[in-house]
Image 1 (cartoon, rainbow, N blue to C red):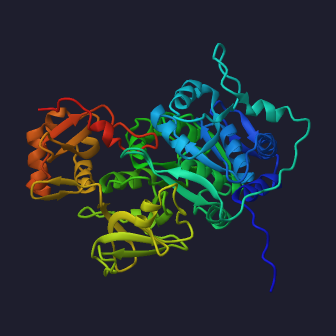
Image 2 (image 1 turned 30 degrees about the vertical axis):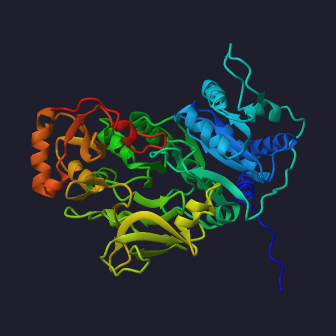
Image 3 (image 1 turned 90 degrees about the vertical axis):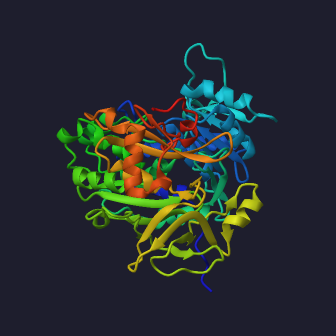
Length: 523
């Protein structure tokens, strides 16, 4: 029998791509500085050599707390090259939650952005047991108390660039990717090197550019980091923003000739509403990938008209990675009387719609979405009970309700657990949000349930008025009448909150836990 080729991790694939054209720009920082492919390649090997002397390798966990900077990409690649697992901490999460996540994952080393030294110290103070070693991605601000050795400086000080061999094995975890954290402490999803290496070696993003030029304007700790990996493997370049600002994003697309954006739907809506959009040169933009939470059909019709045939909607989740894709053709005729499709299964993905007893359901009949693919998680970190509930016989039970049409397109109804239980039945927030986004006086909407003292639930609306529209149209009586007319009395809200912006979680989803803390509603 022929011998199997040795395993190459995703990092080795990426490093090989960087080495093929070392003079090209690989990353442009938020301050406009260019990092060449050769420089990034060497920094990864240098960081890996330094981390190796600190005992980082297979079976060890490195937690990364950073904003969008090239050093955090290099540190992730270096840790994974050594076979260590990484935990990606979201800037913006509460320090208590960050501490719980990092400690639960057995963090041996915390690598911190020097600009986040205060958060890093608060995180460390939240540990109940021994604290991990700390290294920083550059010098601390003047006057800041010492935190740990400077990984960037130690790497740059090496007299030569070593060649560090890849140590990861297919069954090793490359990361513990935590769920969004909108309902308590996030669960740790274990993803293996084998599945991610296969994804990066074979995945291509249609219409992302040749070569792609990707603007990372959301956290590299979320899907923007994966998009950066795909971009670098394809020989492209990544432009970094520190955070999302719609006017700055539009200006950068025009100035830097960006070909590809990744956005969560609420951020895409902010681009649509930005007054600079009509006068911005978007001719370089060939792909906008969006996903991460439910998209509004009325708003996506607006997006298709504003941006043209460049929209690619992804449906996925941490436990199964990307599941389906809806391309430009799916956005050409978004229905006005029903949900929009999230597309067809991506290559290598098998879908089934099943009832609570596990029986497959025919097209058109809603049930729980089950997924089987090479991208399925290994399981939840230290939670065999939850793993057994969600992962069965190689199938991931997504917890999402949906149905397939006769052509194999998937339509989502809602989350099994994201329902508001009111007297008389269940309210699905996504259905009501779609209706509200079609209202001419509403720019953004979030629907959530609030428990009363007697433990019943009420429907609450958080609304951002559309520019130029008076809030008089958004009184509780007017909206109750509108919603009852279109959805029935079951969906009628008990309260309306008018806001300047919908608060978002660190990964960009509507923060419904925060919304539940709002004070008195609009009468």
